[in-house]
Amino acid sequence: MKQLSILLLTLFITSYNYSQDHLRFLTDLNDNPTKVVLKFNKVTKHDPHDWKFVYLFDYFGNISFQRSIQKRKVISEQFFDYNKKGDIIYEKKDYFNTKGDSSEVLKTANKYDSQDRLIRQTLSNEQGEVLLIMDSLIYDCNNLISYTKDYPKDEKKYTFHLTYDNENTLNSTIMYVLSGGYTNVNYKYYSNGQVLESQIHSLVIIDNEKIPIDHVKEYFYIYDKHGNWTKRYVKIDYGKKQLELTRKITYR
Image (tube, rainbow, N blue to C red):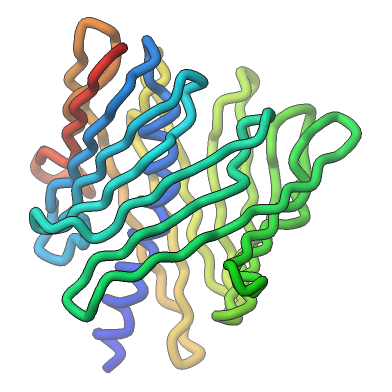
């Protein structure tokens, strides 16, 4: 049972890091693309990343549409709307499965400080039920250095701390969970800003026992003529280099 728990927690930690990287994959694009197809390739037999995502962008560079595909089957589609600051205020999700299709509308309320920086974000469904509260956002100049994510419905809460170097490049991200465990990701970069290496240090607590789970990932890229990468390879714990991601970009 303990080995199964470790595996499930490892997958959760991997999923967390994936979601952080997912955002990064969509914010380092040149020449304002209209469409990006992002495909995850399995690196290990326990790797949950058997997914493909299709994104469409508006003229402001915001994602207006996302389609999620697993094993060639469309799982969900999402539509987004933004305020003038570029923050999401409306999201519609359509789910497709064997038990019947369903839809969900999500509304986001944003609060800003006197310098127009986001300090609180609340995500609710159509029934007014609060699903996520992103709060306690703290900045150093314009760099976000700390925040919390609270999921009231699931009774889960996470605290994040971020550090930067002298050029305002993200150095590390630490996620703390209520049980006392954490995941700390430290980054190294190429001169062009792409991630060269990530060192993942995790501490999970199972049956009051502290269990460390550490990994080192090295990254290698293939670029197109616009300077955007189209393939990303990875070495885990200095092992064999394997294709992790492919990215097909359509430009305006």
